[in-house]
Image (cartoon, rainbow, N blue to C red; front, side, top):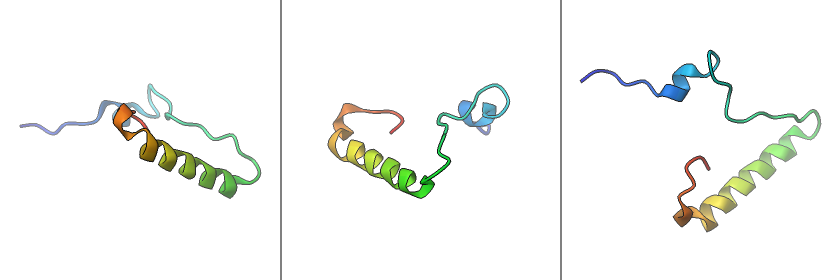
Length: 54
């Protein structure tokens, strides 16, 4: 068996951009915590929904 490379991870920076982009100049820490809380809420309440990139 050969080594497998994840297609998105291999192409990031060459042919594909990152999946998320931050535009925060101020309050970066507060916004990161808000993002983490939103992700935890989605994972907790919508886990059976099958969200692939949460």
